Image 1 (tube, rainbow, N blue to C red):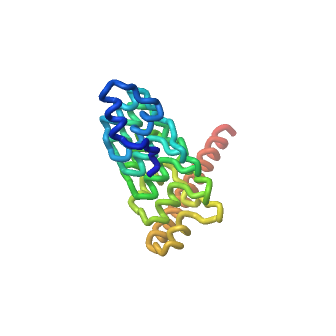
Image 2 (image 1 turned 135 degrees about the vertical axis):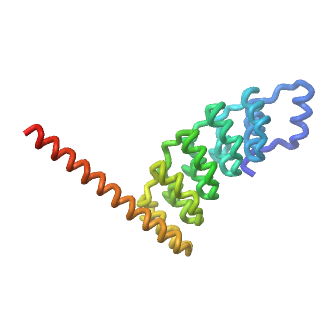
Length: 212
């Protein structure tokens, strides 16, 4: 487990019951564990008692990382809407909460991070292989997760450190139909962009003619 534990959780509960104040580190650990199991009440109380919502463990995981990795939607909403969790934070290897959710195919969690959290790092690359959230969704055949990523600006032609696109990642894993879908999406994206540029050029030409 990524949560750093003391010798026995029961001792902490006894100390708390007897009125002994928990340290910030203990409260942080309680917060991380509560995020994993989806206990929103404990998440709320730990933060109110002094846990730092954006504090990271030894691997760089924050409360939002733990919640996203476990698909704890109510906790993700609480952290983002009420407690000021930062969805842009990455762990020691550059992995964000969004990447974790995408890699597991947790589509609703992905949507929450992008919409509620207003995450702007949809095209961020982790630092080991250079994968984006779309790469991770593609490599794990999570077709249903493509849509929210794409609608929020995911680059279908983004390359990892080996020059592989999400389509190529899917193909390497043997997900050929998924790869074909990504290829079609990329073509459609390029055609849409070309149409937009053509309309823009036509508009500018009309404006220049009017000025002349």
